[in-house]
Image (cartoon, rainbow, N blue to C red; front, top):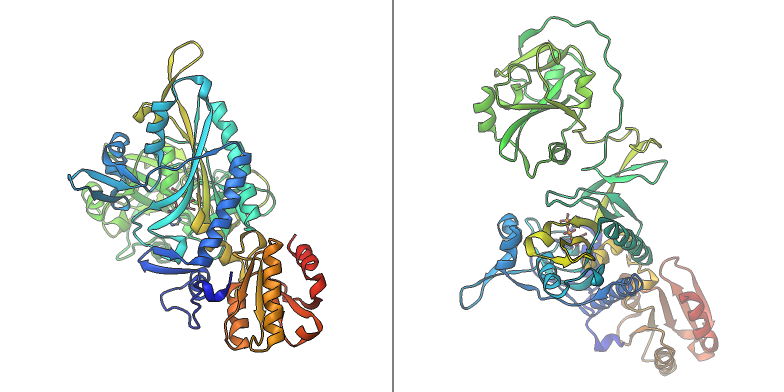
Length: 566
Ligand code: ATP
Ligand code: MG
C-alpha cells in the first residue's frame, strides 16, 4: 500500500486525554480515532491489525473444531427478560426503542441469542456437543470508559459458546478452549497468564481469565514465585494454618476510644498490634445482614464472602443501616452483644486468636480481651480475606507475588443457567428431555490489540510482533526527487507485492527525518531504506525491534526478507 493512497494521520504531540502508552501510540501513529467517549474508528492501519488478530483467532478456532457464525447486535428485550439480565445489568446495557416503541438492547454478549437459537435448532443428543463462535461488535455502556481500546463502550469481541449433554463433555471443551486461547495469545506475542477467576453469581463454576501482564492492568494477579499457580486476587485462597494462641484468657474490659475509627487508628491508640485486633464490617448478603470479622491487618474480600455463604449478592451495609442495627458508628462495631437475627461469620484467623480487641457496638468504645465462645458467638469460620504478597501459595509451592494484568480473554463453565431459562433441551439416548450444559469463551479482540502495544513499544513508537503487524515491511525512499532512488523504490514495491511480502511504501515527498520518525512510530518489523547507495543497487534494512541495520543488495533482498520474516 502506498502511503499517499491510504490514511495514516500521525501526530507529533501526545494527545492530552490519553494517559497510557497504548492509547497514546495508537492515536499518534494514526491507527485509531475517537468519535465519542469509548467509541473508536479503526483507521486503515488499525483495521489491518484487527484483521491480523482475528485471523489468528479464526485459525485456532478452526483447528479446535469451533464453527464461526454471526449474530445480530440488535437484540429484543424479551430475550433478556427471560434470563432476568434485562433488570440485572442496569446502566451497562445499551437500551433503545424501535418505531413501535418495542424495547431492544445492543448486545454486550450473546448468551441469550445463541441459547435461544440452539434451543430451536438442536433437539437431540446426537448433535451434541456443539461449539460456535462469532467475531462481532459489542456494546457496553461502561461506567468509566478509559484507556482507549482497553475499556471501550463499543468494542470488538470474539465470543464462543458450547453446548453439551454432560458435565464431562463441557470439561473437555473447556480444556480444548483453554489450550486454543493459550495458542492465540502466544501467537499474539503477549506475556500472559491464565488465572483462576470468579464465576460471579449466575450459577457458573470453573473459570479462567487470560491476563496480559501490564502495569496499567486493572486486575491484580496473585501468583506463586515457584509454581504455575495464578489467580485473580478476588479468588486466591489464603492457605495459612494459624496455630491457636496459648495465652491465658484475660478479663473483658470496655474502654473509651474517642474518635478512633480505622483499625490503624485504634491499634495506634491502644498501642496494640494490628494482628490482635478484629476488623468488623456489616454486610447485606442477599436479604439478610451478616457481621463479618477479620484480623485487623487483613482486608475482607466480598467475593469470597459471597462464595462462602452461597449468596447471590453481597454489599457493604450502609452507614445508616449499620447504625440502626448495631447502635454504633461504623468504626465502633464488633461481635460482642450482636442483636439477635444478625449472623456472625469470621475469617479462619479469628479462631486462633485470644484476648483480642474489637469495637463494642457503642460509639467511641472498644473492648479489650474479647474471646470467641466466651464473649461472642461465631456462626461459621471461612476463608474471607484477600491474600497478601508474601503469603504461602495455596498450592503449597512457593510464595505469593502480585502483578497487574489486563483481561484479554476468559473461559467459563456456565452450567445450565441460560439453557434452563431459555429452554435449551435435548432428548437423551433414552428419549428423555434433558437440559443442556453450556460453556462460554470470550476474547477482547480490540483490547488485545491495545495490550500488545502496551507490551511492545519503546520511546519512539510501536514495535509490532511479526504475526500482528499491519504490514511486514516499510519501504522508504530518502529522496524521491532523485530519479534512481524513486525508480528503485518503485521497483522494490512492485516486486515485494508480487512476492506476497506485505509492504507499506512511504512515497510522500517529505523530509527523510519525518518519514523515519513516522516509521518508528508506526512500528513495522523491517524498514527498507532506498538512499544514496541506490545507484550501486544497495538498500538498507533496519529491524524495528533490535535496531540492527545492514545493507542488502537488491538481488538478495527478497531472500533476506523471507529469512527475516520467517
Ligand atoms: P472487565 O472485567 O474488564 O469489564 P468482563 O469480564 O466484563 O471484562 P467479559 O464479559 O468476560 O468481560 O468479556 C469477554 C472479553 O471482552 C474480556 O475478557 C475482555 O477482553 C473484553 N472486554 C470486556 N469489556 C470490554 C470493554 N469495555 N472494552 C474492550 N474490551 C472489553
Ligand atoms: Mg471477563
